[in-house]
Image (cartoon, rainbow over all chains, first blue to last red; front, top):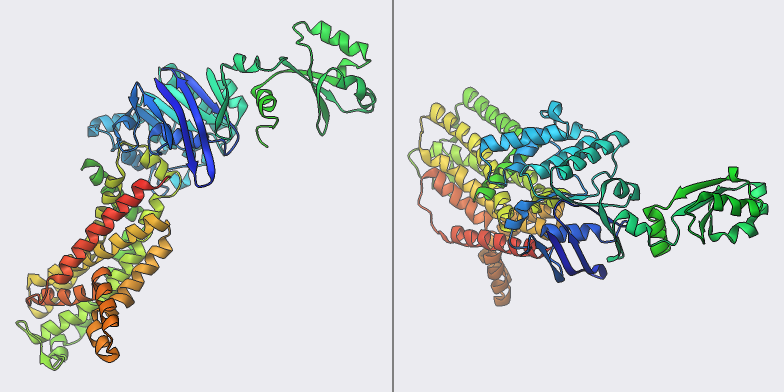
Length: 306
Length: 272
């Protein structure tokens, strides 16, 4: 449904995208993960068609997206990272404005506004001016403004930045509902846990390049082990540091040592046996499943928030 | 066309919600009340009965009424445009703010339509406000002095046209610089200094006696918006006198079209 072929974009001296290729199928919830400045927003702006790539092409349902042809944009609902609402206008007035760019009759538009307000749970605040809204409410209304034409494809560019946990959950549930209704979603974030929770498939982007892609499971398989051991820093564990380091790839943090074991422990009894062998009490050890954060660290040598 | 209309309405609504309308209407009402007081408590016709401009008696059906009209119109022209520039300078930079421009450009609307919508919307905002003031003054002149000449109402169109000329420049400056302050300052520079100076280029040239200087002044006269000359045309129209030269109107129209087209060109080349 969405095909990105070898897209590159340069801003003055910065190469924002370097030969990015991706395919997103109809009905997918696709995550685009990467740190700030990785090129996520640039790619979104190119998909929606208002930023022209220097090289490469984007196809929506087989039709090439061109920046001077606005008709394909009717298929897309874009939720920008920054709030694009008119702060002095009410929620209703904002939605009327953004909905009027599509060929709706007055009745249709009013119905669409009702549905959108219901979806983002702002029916009771429709007559309030946006500047009085909380950050989370503004975010939700920003999403509603992108859904008024019932688009097939929804692009969300970090829609939970600066949002409280309650609103964040509301946004997640709303997006999951849209996906369940058959919408195709592309979701950019630098929060790995969001991608893990929401997306069926994802790509990791760094310095303008896609460095890995696949399902969560496929990405974690890139690591040689699925577990991470966190060993609390104490006098006892520090005394065993030499032995601990032999267990796998070692890193030291403020309050704990982290080990990515050399061996893939499908049976944890084997792991505990190894810990016992070196004299490490298991009460100091916390085992966690590998996450996308670990994948990113493994692929780039950096933490996602570095 | 539908999109241009939508953006125009949006600009109008934006002006309303940002209290620009209220600001304009408040000042206009205050001015109307001042003039009303003058009309009620003084014998205005007698006051202006002997006025001559440049040694000539004013033309029109009643010279005193003509003098009153000019006395009202000239400050109105200067002050009205000063306020209009101040109020509208932020329309384009505000549209170009992150988030706002992202959401607008993701809609099925072309950049040309966006610029045209902003242009017509801004012009409509100023027209409504100027017409309110001019219409109020016309009623006072009508009731107070018995002069119901509709020519005076045409002043609202001329003032709006001059605003459209300056606004097209502000749109261009706003697109290029994204700065409302710069757009406002250059517009004031043109309106308050450059245009009056260039309008008097022939007088200045006689003092300097330099052909190169005259040629440069002539060049700039046709490039810079001719707001001063349009001010003279305003006086002629409002008094029902014939217009001496249509050249400033034609040159201004050409300037508006060129500024808007260039704005569209720059806007369509820029990445946001």
